[in-house]
Image (cartoon, rainbow, N blue to C red; front, side, top):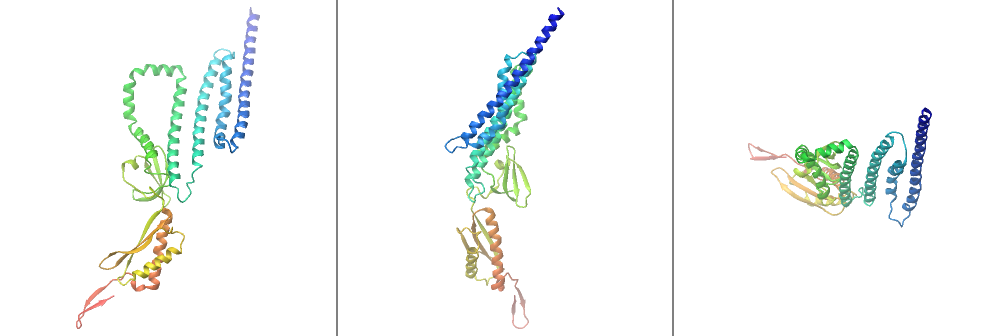
Length: 363
């Protein structure tokens, strides 16, 4: 009897060893399929006449390297004979890892598709309005899809545990009350998520838009599901909740187009020759690459009791260029007045009452 039991134990260990070898061979077979499959996919991806993009194949490589061996192991485990409940434990662990690998593969596919779409648009171009629209929509939607993939993967992993599934069934009757409580607790989070989707669809702001918010001039640097980062001109970052751009007014300088108009205001004496200043403005604009050639002009904007207000109108291809152009035109016009017409700079006049010949004017 003892010999029979000992032999039976040896038989169990022998079966376990065979099962372990079989499992190892299944994992190696999965890796072999991975190598062959991706050699074929890479050959097709580099061909110009195929719709398969190289970026997508490269994104698939790492998750597939984990997914294919796990899939081979999952198909092999039911036929193996490990002692005790080891087979069931290995199947459960393999299922959890397989769910994670599938979620990884889906996320990689989304990122690959994002790269494929964004490669068609150059956000660094001067007229990048369409590119910024696409960048904003794609980046926000990809973030939302990745969150959904992670949520579904985590829920699927939890449902593989029997105790969790039983708890879920027992709470099903009170799901209505729980839903109301969760709704109140997550009201702000849900509003933020919906605001992110609305931003992506309606696009009151886009990546790299020039905006003025909270009295600060800056560019939209990052749009997430919960907040927006504005890079201010002095490189500070202004972080605002994403609902801010749906609830409060703000200025968007590049909402319709990237080219902008700029103005330069000068206060001069009443003796200023407006025609000469206008001609000098034309010469200044003709001599700089900052001006896009679309709009220019100089008018007398106002006349106060002390000065004449001149306004020069200029145009440039984008907000950065129009800022530089305004500073340049202001500097050149002031230099022109100082050099050619110093008497036309703002002057303070006073009247003095003389003893013999009335009123004297002092300039």
